[in-house]
Length: 424
Ligand SMILES: Cc1cc2nc3c(=O)[nH]c(=O)nc-3n(C[C@H](O)[C@H](O)[C@H](O)COP(=O)(O)OP(=O)(O)OC[C@H]3O[C@@H](n4cnc5c(N)ncnc54)[C@H](O)[C@@H]3O)c2cc1C
Image 1 (spheres, protein in one colour):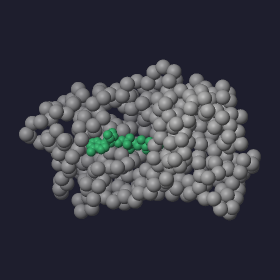
Image 2 (image 1 turned 45 degrees about the vertical axis):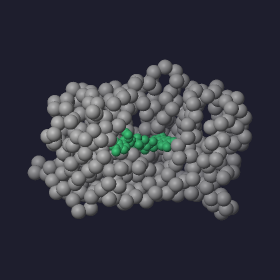
Image 3 (image 1 turned 60 degrees about the vertical axis):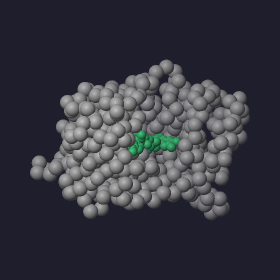
Image 4 (image 1 turned 120 degrees about the vertical axis):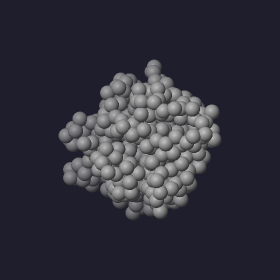
């Protein structure tokens, strides 16, 4: 029997023979799924969220150890979380504001540097860095008090889509009927494949090794990124209390070697790369978390709504797109999907039901440009910095310096990085 944790107005006996009907089912219990389910319920839509991991509420992060999954949150994410009344409820002592970003080329020359500054751009900050757990915990708390939202810890095994809606069959043998299904079930989205949406997938043949460190020098509220010869990328993102979060993208073989590296040897390793820039900026680093590695890939779903003949399912988050983490934008993009969907449904004409084809097409149209642009730029940057020819090397390093000298391009870059969404 699936676990239901909610003060719900629904009859939550999941195994009854009668099929319950709700407005929306959100499949997925990651940040995109949780934010979307909460937002839909806040619009007054009866919403059920289903995911196997919903049975274990995420505990509040506490203490001096920061969680292992650290994200850069863009201002567009902040806007969505504020709209959902989550932002003010977060423990802000666990969020680090980013005021500067410094990106370095792989020749080690001073001119091969791009510096983005909140001050120059006339904005209070470029981003925030914080724990995934912090956001998830606060979303869980808000869900408990939202009586239009029910969370079910289970797995969706099968979907049947017809002209009026979708019937979902769960692993516990119960079924639920919804007008609309939002698939937020991650990069391998079983929903995406079950409704026949194809996805182009490309492995980057890289893994990201992540860990948190404390540093002896102040990070100056700056996110640093070094492109290294051979295609490795090392990012050091600032955290509160003189800590940094490392994301080191490298070959799977080197990732395995880094995971085996003895703690005492890491500072020597840092001194060997990027001409010793890491200890120069951050001093001596002390490991605060266990190291973990994540394989990196690019995925783009061919459609964001489906199935083809009678769309009643919308893809959001990694179910729709996955990108290289070099720009720290994957989740931010996914939350812009959520914001767009909430906007469209909140402004829908009174005669349209939430699964009306016009609304779903509107959603897909509005998400195409942002997704394509970000996937393209991230992919080109990744490939440009992996190329080993002399021309590529000169081009990328000259490019960094050139962009750095152009206020116009820098401004556009910052505008893109900030992302924009509006709620009316
Ligand atoms: C190293 C690294 C660093 C990153 N850094 C950043 C960053 O700084 N900023 C940023 O914006 N992004 C970043 N990202 C990207 C970010 O991690 C993802 O975009 C984000 O986690 C995706 O969230 P999601 O909710 O869409 O999917 P997920 O978090 O993958 O959630 C999927 C959910 O679906 C559920 N599910 C799966 N199958 C079923 C089923 N059949 N039935 C029911 N439920 C199901 C799962 O249990 C899970 O709850 C980074 C990624 C990596 C790898």
